[in-house]
Amino acid sequence: MTLPTVESLRDLTRDELIAQVLQLAERLERLEAEVERLKRPPPTSRNSSQPPSRDQKPNAPARKRRRHRGAKAGHAKAARPLTDKPDQTIEAQPSACTRCGQDLQGVTPKRTVRRQITELPEIKPVVIETRQHDVPCPGCGHTERGRLPLGLEAERQFGPRLEATVTYLQHQQHLSYERTQAAMPDVFGVSLSEGGQACIVERAGVAAQGQADAWLDDIRQSAVVGSDETGARVDGRTWWEWVFVSATAVLHVIRPSRAVDVITEIMGPARVGTWISDCWKPQLRAPADRFQLCLAHQIRNLQGLRERAPRLNWARELQALFREAIHLDKRRALLSGRGFARRVTQIERRLDRLLARPVTTPAAQALVKRYRKHRAHLLVFLHDPAVPHHNNAAERALRPSVIHRKVTGGFRSAWGAHAYAALASVIDTAKLRGQSIFDTLVALMGRPVLPYLTAPGA
Image 1 (tube, rainbow, N blue to C red):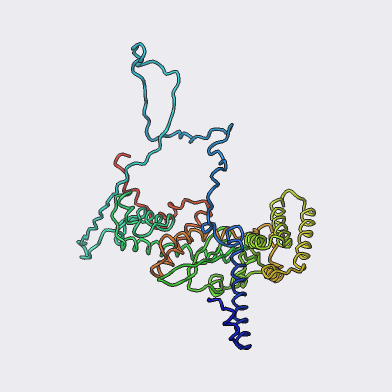
Image 2: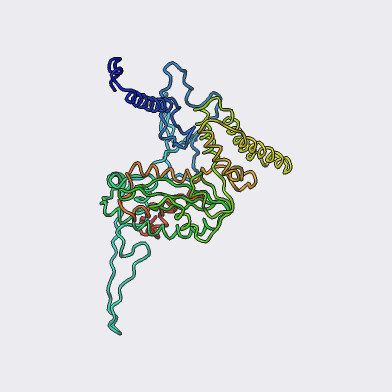
């Protein structure tokens, strides 16, 4: 913008001067707002819902003495435990004394030093050929074909363990089709096309969907359910991945909607006792008797408000109150029932007083409005020990999906997205129940063909 001169301003009429002043005032207001925005602390995982992966990592000060890495002085040595049943034992017996030449064969050792090395055998694919014989019946002329054993069905080209390996690499370690295609011959000696991988993933998705449908009933019958959602890219469009977590199962679904109709579809006629989520409106319309807002989210939001308005005591006091409530919940077993109830009543009353206190800044007013509206959803966990104060389980369940999206770029088709969601349900539920992920995938793909791989005489 060119600055006007005194002469140019003198040539303007009164109305033109007024118009120019108004234009400059509007521009000044925009610039002041931009300066205020730039002066605000940047959002981080500590003061907002931003994930830690997006935080700007600062460089460590050059002269700052860094913490000593490794074990501290006096720390007990930790060593890998020795197994009592090694697969192979190598005896290292000296034959002669290196000092005087005395023959040492047959001399009883004074001490035996045991060490163990864990190694992987060379991985080679095993090709199993099946031959079904068509035999005519001499009695009636009917031709009977020999039946193949389980795990060696006619429609198979790959065994369950190989299929589970491909599924594990793609859905647990987040390898793309191209990287999986490169890894298979390098590590396992198996050449595999992208079309072959797609067939395996499709087969795995169909099998996983059967288990996911069973876990849907688990979610519907649970007393406490946590839920969250994140974006997903499907065939170049934005969809949404939803997760529903109970004490015994994890269910993922990917839908083109982020509205409450997804929750309605999943829950059906069921109604749960407590629903844990953030403040997203569709989540708070779930069929539940009560709701618990994730306090971890609220503490981060209050931290962001404190950084923008350091003199605002209201944010500091409410943040401290939420942390005190969480600490009280963790000490529940150490207190008497009456003592715990008295502390809960004190916290509830202090919360009411804080929410009744007037605040002046717009950001604080927005939070006060939120908490007044959802007052009944803030401290449910203090009244039910089965309800956590956070929604960490659902957030952790979605974190691998975010990594998968960033690594692979999304899904090429809707069936690929649905297959991923079903397999994520299988993998997360296996982890929740303390089961081996790979063994779970092998069982999912069918009966292993290991009996046919046993070496003769083994």
